[in-house]
Length: 251
Ligand code: PGA
View (cartoon, rainbow, N blue to C red):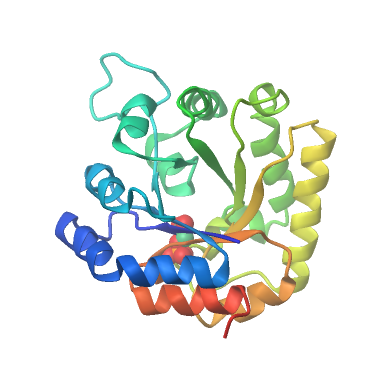
């Protein structure tokens, strides 16, 4: 399984380095013991030092975002080549928080995926319905629209694998998650939509949104995802370990 720790802007520079140095062997042991890939996504400034520390280990480093452009006058943006040079092997794309803050369109996301693929970085593409779409029972239409927006890039053979992370926006940071039956239905719906749109097959389908040691028991019982995208519960190693151990049934 794959577990992606999205530290957002919740782990300052010194804490991120300390987390890794303190838990380097724990992380490696956890990864080996559970046969899992662990990806840490710290803020941009922590990427290079963490990747240097994790070099020659099974722990992978991922970015939380990447520019749509390869280079140019884009103040505040970080290009995919720099991410690759810093040692990133994954990047989130279209997380709901970045979609909201930067008003990203499908065209922007296609640009990001293109840049990441050109630099051998695996995109983890986030999709999910909002609270109001969930309430209005239009969640599946929202997911379809988000996937359809990426048809021009995902319906062709990419030079790298990609992953889809289903993250209902109403579940992020709320402690609430969909029930196992709904997760099964949504996973099937996403798989069918991907097939209908003739996308190349994603390497993994992840779930994200309030994954913690309690909710993982319900989430894992659905047994339908290849891994999890974990926000606040990934900031503490023991909490992360509980999630990984439960999800992989090494308890
Ligand atoms: P959460 O965040 O686990 O804190 O809900 C998940 C995410 O936003 O990726």
